[in-house]
Image (tube, rainbow, N blue to C red; front, top):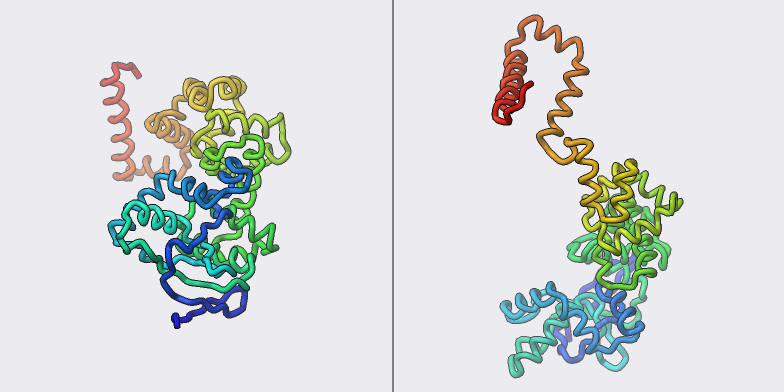
Length: 338
């Protein structure tokens, strides 16, 4: 008899078997958060097992995992499966490891290292809500091996489908409540975008939406669709005019400059940023940014520091002289007269 263990799920003790199960008896889950959207677009939500294998195997990260599994001589970490009526096992966590084993078994016939996979086997009675809580605990609260979009999708499912409150999510997933709120808002915005731009590759742009909802002014523009902001945002993201979350952090400054804003619509963020830098060199240079800050600080020098210099504070006088000399040296090198 296979050894038993248990987990506590939503206040109840749930037992599971620990065993090795034949690779050929394992069924991949079409609702796997990593590929669910892609399968819906490519196969209208009805995908064969072979299709799921190929979609997952097409990802470089899964191929790398396969190489590691081959080097290790098989899967080491237990997958999580649920027993089916026909004797098969539905993967609930570990689709990628299962795909790798299936591919390795196919590539190396007769090599029994890939014939079976270690698994934690749950009974059919385990509810979908229990599964969602279990998987969130594995991939969001602990290992965090899922990307941000997939974590947000799981959090969204627990909140919207199973009614888990933000407090429950924060406590059980060991995340701050503010992070939960950000993930929910970013997932909603990304989902709205994906309904209009049906390209699975766009899931990778979730980080742009995550940065968007963290910016109070930008989020308000999005939520209220001020000046047609939502459709313009979708266009910037879809056309690659915004392609890095760091760009979103500077977006408000661009939107406050009519010329830069126009260039953003026409050419993209990089060109729009150049417009701002031409007007304010401090935006594109650490040196001139430091000079600008130092100049502003000097203009607002507190009387206490002036008095310290008047009294001959040696360290402060040295710093002032060093600054003066550094400016003179820079001007000499650049052949600029101060």
